[in-house]
Image (cartoon, rainbow, N blue to C red; front, side, top):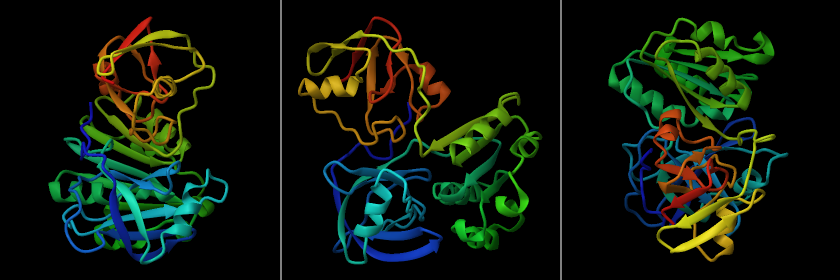
Length: 321
């Protein structure tokens, strides 16, 4: 199970110190404590929860320097046809505005590997910024493939190229067509860790390209939920070790919904299995993992699950709730 950067979920009041447009429809926001003082420490790959209202919470990757505890930096793509979170963030986060966040959590950490390939699409570059910097400091071979429609849609592209030179490949799809990840990754040597973040199609292409490669692992940060259409769901018994309750989870309801209806307080956010907020420890029972957070190894360990989407693979599940 991945250990989050911080187990504390107590909201933190921050103020927007700076705001800059870094690409088409993408603004960068610098957050700090209202007075002075350090923010909670974090490691590359971490994200924060932005509490836009009681019912509207969104996750954004930290793209600043973990060595600077005075500020957090995030970049937000305004999506006019999204679920409203990015538009609300662009409206609320004016310089001087106060907002609450939850401390950083990390489900996308830099693992030990013999080498790294980072694959980013558009706004998917945000978690890659500190990951690339950490890999560069570590001295292991690494490279970044960064794709987007054009220069205007690719934040930090010039900054990355100026800092890292030929270790960064920039690809414009409107000019050069779709990037051939299968060919690019075909020569990856055993022990390579491939990190992918961006559109679902980009992540799927990276996973497919590495499926037949020996000892090449893919780690993905997803912005959209996995496609669960056609997934088999059946009722099962749920026991909550901390609350002492035994509940029935119907086929068409999630563990999170059933727990909340019974008065159990469970932290949650996206309710789509993408953010990791509702991760809950498993005491016993086999889990049918349906999230987009845990790695294959973590799923096999069966130590935790995302209760907003994952279910029991058998008849009974016991959780640390």
